[in-house]
Length: 82
Image 1 (cartoon, rainbow, N blue to C red):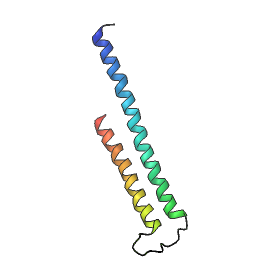
Image 2: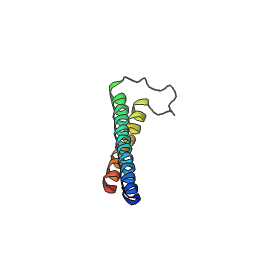
Image 3: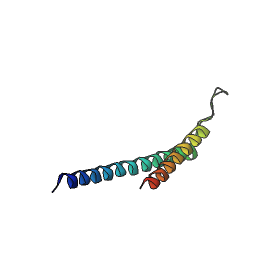
Image 4: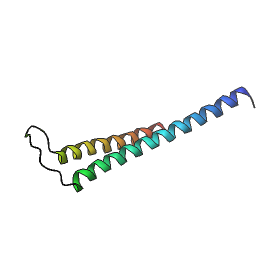
């Protein structure tokens, strides 16, 4: 096998590994986002004693939505690179 073929094969393997890692990353982001949304909806959170502190339920819901959307965005960006 020539050196040129070896480099091409090596870069193909590296691209496959990077693609696998990116795929795992957006799946984890979506899973964490879904878990945060589920926590905000299913758990009975007490009202905060300090009115300046946001309610835990709304905070987790917003945070979960942001993380979930980041996972969707990462998936879309990966699709454009492929």
